[in-house]
Length: 276
Ligand code: NAP
Image 1 (cartoon, rainbow, N blue to C red):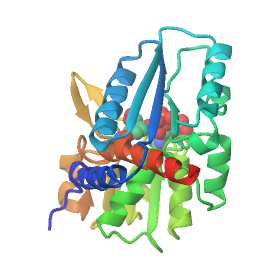
Image 2: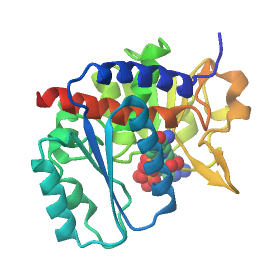
Image 3: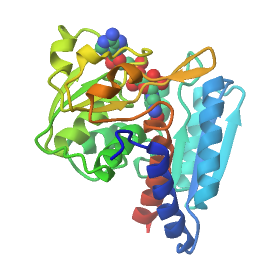
């Protein structure tokens, strides 16, 4: 059996499942992506979302503003909140410096918050209630499920405590009965902790930071990191160094990344269905 967790293959399976589901829907779900400014990484991510939505048959609308005030953007979001035809809204982050991201994101109707970033959805997740969940951690849970990796009772170490990845990841794992340790830049003796992990999830944004000395033999490694150096992508885990020691590992690219986009589409379909 392959050691590699093939996120590309698994995400394609889910894309096809969603495509079949959407084909049966009377009306197609609609996703609106809002972007502001000219962040080059955002352009790439927006393009990936459009491609994936088109494949599945989700209506995709991109609203781009070279610049806009917080008040104007909030007004636009409120119009989309009130538009019955719109099922999912995302604001592409980061917004340009000076914009109030928290206020803007929290303007999105939580029922249309397909990035799972509003305070209400974060609170529902914390309380183990059904909610729209941040796409990357949701995609990781799906990868673990589809690879038959047991989470219940496992010692899982997550490195990184961002609102987008680390914290929702921790909550999803706790809700799935894992024992979770959340580490960050102030964690002492990180290696001592990571060596005990049955499942190690790394989301720090540092190229090949995790070496073989830091992982447990026979563990599962989920590498969230995307580090672009001289046009090439690297994970947060030194893949070649740890490969022999571990049981399973996600590659970069082709691991967690493709799952993130497809989970967004899953959230759009879920938002459409709960609206009915
Ligand atoms: P972030 O907001 O920058 O957070 C990074 C986290 O890593 C922080 O909690 C930070 O600790 C911690 N950290 C940094 N250096 C550390 C160290 N030496 N030891 C231990 N912890 C350390 O990042 P993010 O948004 O979660 O993203 C993390 C990485 O995942 C990035 O490479 C990003 O591009 C990638 N990403 C990938 C996807 C995907 O779909 N594959 C999605 C989202 C993000 P402090 O809190 O103490 O500062």
